[in-house]
Image (cartoon, rainbow, N blue to C red; front, side, top):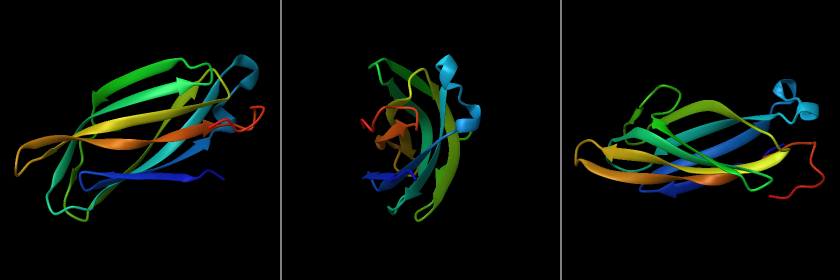
Length: 134
């Protein structure tokens, strides 16, 4: 069972849970795949819109890949106060463990304020590692 990671920045709470995908992984070929489920919740009093995302994905050898792009899963969700958006995505690694951390680049449309929301660091752990290292 994986644990939940949660963090609130600028009245936006981001919760993450990762899952190792045994059926898509090929450990003998150095391919380990995870899915992660993210919930973004607006706990403030202003509408907020997710514009871009930035990820840092680090494997067990310390190699970091940076990913930046518009929205998430092809969407740029607008969250009303009390509203939330959930999505599932995934990532492969060449090692049996690693971690991800990132941020969402947001705007409050009514005020025009741009701000970043932290995505909490979360572990990518598989049953193929010697011991839990994250």
